[in-house]
Image (cartoon, rainbow, N blue to C red; front, side):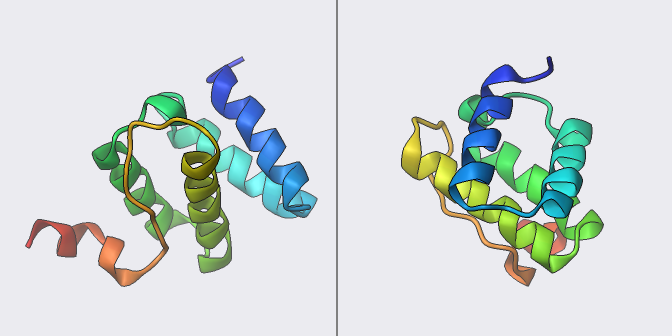
Length: 98
C-alpha cells in the first residue's frame, strides 16, 4: 500500500480520537490524493504545501482534524518538521510569501 508508515499512524490516530467514519473517509481520501511521501520524512515546507491544498479543498472541520493529526504525529513520533500547524488564514499560500 502507498505510504505504509503514514497509513499505520493514521489508523492509530483515528482510534485514539474516535474519529467518525465520515471524516476518516474524507481525510484518508485527501491524503491518498495529495501526500507525496510519508509524514515522518516531511519537512516544514512539505507540510505547508499540503496544508495550502487542504485550505482550498477541505472544510475547516476536516482541515482542523488534519492539523491535529500533524501535531499528534510530531508529539508522538520522530518527524523532520518542527512547527505546530493550525488551519488559519496565516497558512494561506499568498501570505506565506510576503
